[in-house]
Amino acid sequence: MSDSTAARTDLSGIFGPDLITEGIRNQLGEMLRLMVETELDARLAAIRYARVEGRGGYRNGTKSRTLHTSLGSTQFEMPRARIHAAEGSQEWQSQLIPKYERRARDLDATLVGMYFAGSNLRRIRRSLKPLLAEAPLDKNVVSRLVGRLAEHVETWKSRKLEKDAYVYLYLDATNLKIRVFRKVRKVPVLVVLGVRQDGQKEILAMETQVKESAAAWKDVLEDLVRRGLTRPLLAIIDGHAGLRSALEEVWPRIQVQRCTVHKLRNIQSHCPVDAYPQVKSDYHRIVEAQTPSEAKEAYKSFLKKWEKELPKVVKSIEEAGEELLTFHDFPSEQWRSLKTTNPIERLNLEFKRRVKTQCSLPSEKSAVLLLYGLLLSGQIRFRRIDGWETLIQVIAKVQREESLKKAAS
Image 1 (cartoon, rainbow, N blue to C red):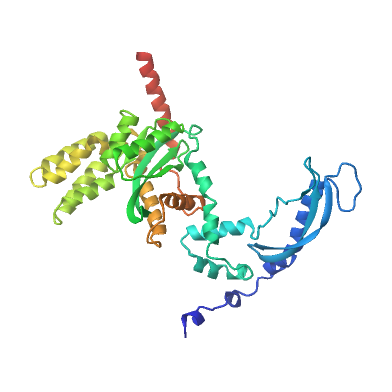
Image 2: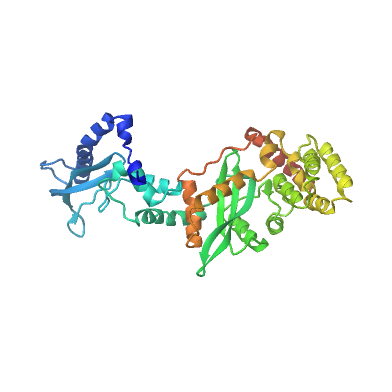
């Protein structure tokens, strides 16, 4: 049996006919006609055949239209009219069903959502065959729909940020294969994820750069400042030296939390396989300590124990220093969320999951457009950070400290 024959299972034969949907479909054309007639009556300020003063124009027959919706395709009679205007009579254009529109907008949204979920045109055609039997999709339809997002992307990238205060920032980069100057290259996309006062996470920036460097990160951070971002209380980073330098330049003496997971991976790369379990256990005593004093004691013990046998491991720990333990300055309910860049790491994994179906992306703009579409279509969603209820305490503490400093100066 061929694949094409085996795959032709009629699901309606399994689940039975959908009498409700069929009933709605049968009335859909009449419902559309009535909606558009009502719209036209309001525009003319007169119902059909009424002779009233001040009417906005006159009807001019009807025209048969076909509209493809999430309930299927239907035909109806679209009324036509001539509208009085200062420059003369003009043809009336419906706002409900614009000229040349052949698909309802929720169906367009469905097509785009399926695309961002990872489906290609062939799969979309198969999935929506019951709805699109009379509306075959040409190969460029999804591209045109996605292209409509381009102007929204630019608006989103330049939106003002002063309306909300962002308490914490997660910063990281993901590499995508993008065609640049006729060659496929790995291009870093610098991502900034902010945490609002209500604990909800929000993407603040996604910018492609030639490489991940201090200058590139500084450009991204300065753009955020220009858009109204105020100084955050904490930045959670993976340890990239360029990013750390840029943070210090834009916000001097900002508190930084180094990702404890990234540091453990770095340690593992310098550690013999048979020694790693013990090194990992000693490392966890540092980052899982319940008090700053316990953490510092575990830190000293780690250095003393391994400085001779594993100097590279010790050097790696010393490189991060106390920035591995910054989370102790914040409520314990939030520690789990503040110790790592996991929220943005999961975001990057979702990016890569979606783009792995394509060998490469055609341009840097298309890369950002795709990532933005994943957010817009709901493919990527964020939950609040752990202990978000205690954020108000953090903010109040900082405000008190700032007031004391001003009073003392």
